[in-house]
Image (cartoon, rainbow over all chains, first blue to last red; front, top):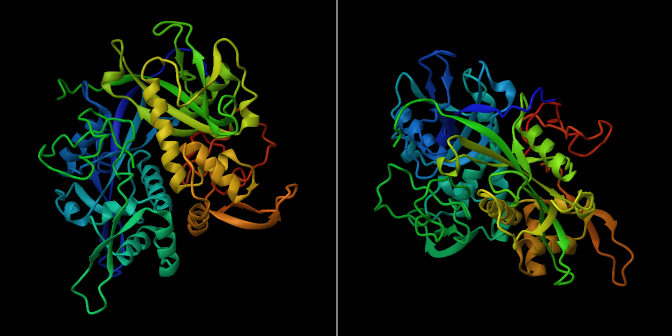
Length: 261
Length: 261
């Protein structure tokens, strides 16, 4: 298939998919997945909505570029950006050059999402109801959404949307919001408890009329932001004094690399 | 951090990590994870072992290049290569150019692994006991191994190492081999059955002295090679007449893209 054996160069770019759960004003209490988009100010696709991102600069590392472009356009600074996928097929290129986009993603809680600098050119959209997007960004978002929903069934990705401790009901509601369908509470409890992903604490959630439900936390043996052997990059704009369970993990070193759950 | 705003180009390369389980001749029955390495025949790192791979050619898609380089060096043609990670940080580059390596991986059963064209420059090594590797390939293997072991706890990756049906004991043995530690059979059964990942069939494994154990199969609602919305690329050298559960999935189209579980 290859017409020649010349080495192939490509322009490097990054994009970010930032998911947050929010209540849908129209449907009421049911939370759904939203993400921020940026309106392009130059050709191609000028005026079109697109994922935050941009080309790599100078000697930047990939994850750094993702954090920089995201912050520059939306003001968002999620603590950990995880590499989602590299889109680099030949058919993506609109011009003479091949462009490889390394896509990063993060899950942010609604309090953090509220800090985004929204305006005429930056806005949150429901992931299931997007406008037309530039390039192949719609495919990228669909893929990210699928990964989110698939991982929900087998991992602790909901941790990103919850606090340090939570009830099983809260955890189930997050799963239901992401999956977009109700889950049987008894089956959910059995699956989660059997997976060993969560650990019961000796604390209970007070302040309700009912019997206080027990609080759980994630099993720390696999840190959400654990990248295994890859060096972890703390957000370049985060305060060095900030502490987190992730920062105290033995895998934490101040070298540049994205992290993965 | 960026010294200039020039767009960054990089040379594109691919590497492949192919995991297989095999019995360790020294330890006996205990299976462990092995992978093929190729000895480099040119500088840099001439004579060093490295992952199969090479630069992208012409108008190739990333997954196609991964399949081509793997086949050219080892003769292996796993049906589905999944994108693992893009390694592209500035510190990787040994020369003036930045090299971005998109790493693909696959799990192959021992029957398929046996088809590899091993020789002086192609050999299988135990993943936990590697020789010195070229570039940052050791880090890449460590990362792939960590991903394998982490995914084992929350997904059905063992499917790749087993047949269409298997007993829970066989499934547990695969998990133990990959994780490198024994698992309590009762807990394992509870977790797997609670996860909904496997479904009991009405068949039993005969031929043993004991009561025939029930055979299970994976729950097909999520195909192992399902890439969600991404078009799936059948192996370029696979026979078009070959059938598989994955090929009959609605997501199957003959476009080029890697697949993900």
